[in-house]
Length: 319
Image: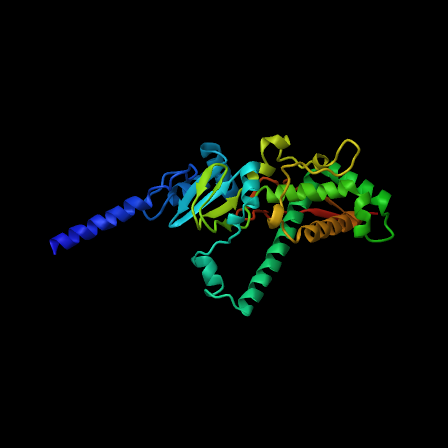
């Protein structure tokens, strides 16, 4: 009996020891502990930074652009630079989606027509949330940067006037409003994580070994809000205009993914945000409420897709 107990104890200790060992070639990251992995370290950093995307960026600064984590029994790799992200998007071995208990519970472990319908509803809601949050960040910054709003008003009045509503046919002649849309998307997506991918088999990214079933997450904060953008927290639509005033998109700007993983709703999202922004700016001016503190663009509702905290604005009819 004693020998059996000792063997059982040794077996358990061996399992705990092995659970702390990182696979050979796995990306650098915090130390793994039995059962929890590095969950406590992630929780500590998140408490210090306040936001999930800042937690990932802090890990990037410490461990490099490709960070290997383990939360409980789930291996997670966070990608923080253009090279590793593009490598993942182009790698067919990374085409899977997470299959953990949460995802299985969402579809009750089966793939039936009713579950497909539920997932389609989820996608519709997610798209609506993305559009609303991008607009929320956009109009918050239009309030804080009135000179940007004035330029948009001038372009709308020159191209459309006040006698009709904006249409998508006006879009090519309104590069400044298009630039406002792109800057709003950059500000929003730069504070989000992507929909996770999953390694379908053992593979490699940027020289690191990625075991099968590892979850792959893109931290857009490190590519859309880093120092290469020059004052990335400032709202400057001019980033997306060339010297001739035409739309240009930097190489690092791919908020809708790339390759086979490019979001199918990109054109629809950009079009919706353009129409809503142009229509509202044609009719209204937005400003800080007199006598109230200015809202801040640096305080967010945390989450995988962070959003601006609710703010008040003075909405005035343009005469």
